[in-house]
Length: 138
Length: 138
DNA sequence: TACAATATCTATCGTTTTAGTAGTCTTTAG
DNA sequence: CTAAAGACTACTAAAACGATAGATATTGTA
Image 1 (spheres, rainbow over the protein chains, first blue to last red):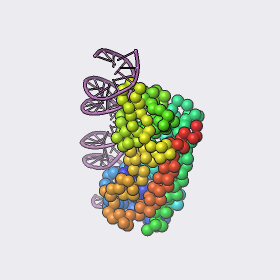
Image 2: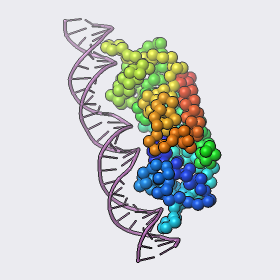
Image 3: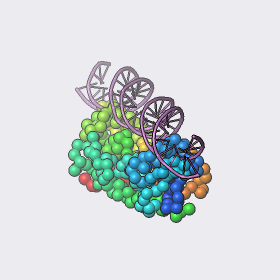
């Protein structure tokens, strides 16, 4: 399951994708439209700004807007930012590799092979779910 | 990511799968072999017994053993037991359906379609990772 | 029959994560 | 100058996670 943070981030990103290169949206308008607590959304958008997926303009008539093309941002990206590795275990993660503390020898670990297969398929399906796709399906 | 509970459960199940219809294993021997805290594993095996994936024999020469064939238990099953829904949101879960609290109208939810596609692919890859497969890859 | 090895049950606990809320400060268009 | 916007810092309640502790029940074997 996605955390609420991640789901809210996705919804906000889809909102911004709809006005990509056409305009911007305020935190308040996204929050209201998507039924997200405003102050919580504020934090989420700040994080998205930190990782350079969005940018913002302060002051009157300010707001947030997408930096990348909607076809270049996917659920996989947001999952990694807010919910961490897509893989089932740290030792098979490409982006967040870490040895497992209970695993004595990684090379002979009998979980590895299946975990890698699941990871590859999950990565693929999450990467295919781009913001663009979400908009197309409306 | 899988929780430790779930990963430990999987390891224990694979251990039991190796001796399926040949014998049983004690909590202590699984814990030692797989580097799992014994008392924690104890709870996990009790849960697996509750859902009828394993059974046990008390007393001297007792232990745990698989109830189902190793080809009939998969990562998907264990994920559902210990880590909940495989789907990215409760509203697209087949086994744990619940409406999302931030979703105003499920029928017109623009996340649904992509989420269902991801769910189906993830379910498939996790269901294919049966205990049997883990053993074959050794 | 006693005992040792096993599983079972119930409770507790420290830490981290989650999902927020509150309040203040900064920037900027009009 | 001011109202409307984002930025920043701090805090908090509740739940989940990853265990640990201790007492009880069962059973094969000597």
